[in-house]
Length: 137
Image (cartoon, rainbow, N blue to C red; front, side, top):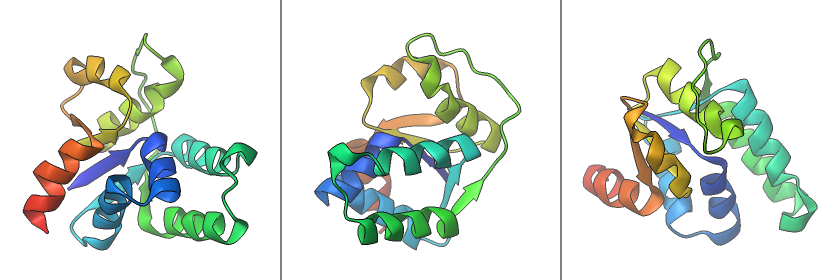
């Protein structure tokens, strides 16, 4: 199973330790699940986790950087997806399209408009936890 994870899910996992963390732990701990990223997504993850406003301690931030570097599968993007709601977020849809991801997990309702653009199932964190994590755990 291939899963693309929105930056807001990662940030919530790092800061709040609830459903987003459960989802991320499921993705990284299950050997048959791949966390799919592009170089652009990795850059965004690291830039956002480094923002002063989140005040994430360096050791925690570096631990997450290590997880991202070691436990994700990087794909290079060779397509363009038009996403008028927020073109800077199109990289997640492009990553899902190129990789053939089964799921894109997000906390951003804007992406629900993209359901028609992809074969990938777009789910909120709570939906993914209920429909995938809870069923396969």
